[in-house]
Image 1 (cartoon, rainbow, N blue to C red):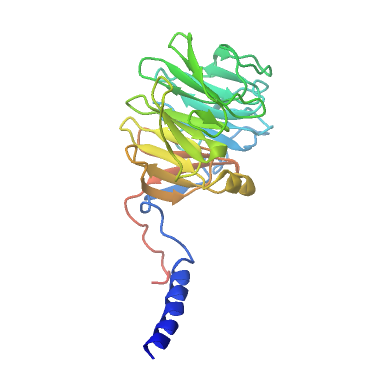
Image 2: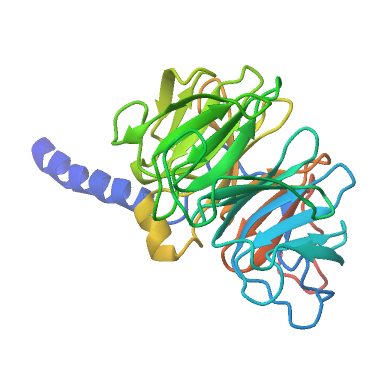
Length: 329
């Protein structure tokens, strides 16, 4: 009789276990408390007649609070500048870009633009003056002065900079390091899945110790190197990063997807913003968000460029909005 009861009880436990695994899971690390404006730059509409936002690949802000938006639309300029309220200010870049990928400000607030399919990096002043071009437009290469598919750039405190040369049809699967004067220092990386090998170098950032965090996209991981390119470790539990950003306080914010396969099927609409502990790789908090890039401004607002054609402005929200009249309790 006791065996019969046990026989009946085990299937019940299995069924309960399976049931517990179904349904919605809580946000990893707890819910990040932010509220989103998904119509920034669109409502009210202030863009010039004929302008239209295409896939928004990157967003950055300057010390004045102006918002720089890089997109792939064919109508209008690829680089748009808005004020903090979303009003159009100025734009430039028509005819200069083959395929937009990312923008970053260096410490001097020079704007660096990566054109992956065009195999070049362009440097602009904040008012749109072209200051320098790295690489040759539409002529991919793999030497000290040419690139295959530059995707992102990161800046060290001493002025050294790193270029992720690993995206697009001509990607080289490498990271290239230069000093502040543009002198070539070194390059590392090759195709593969081992330490120091890459399959799409999508984005990279530096922490205060000048360790480099690199999204090895198709290998579904983040690799971490020291400033000389020596492999330290890798995180394989998070998936690949669409975008990475480290604050001056060493807070790592990442726009993550579970796998490259999911990203391809969802056309870039899957994803989560995650706050990640640098020491352990543990997720501190998360919130659902699509996107291709991530940036934090001086006020802690998270800016996401989405391939849906939206600029997502995530503002810190310490409290839950009050329920509207008539809402169910």
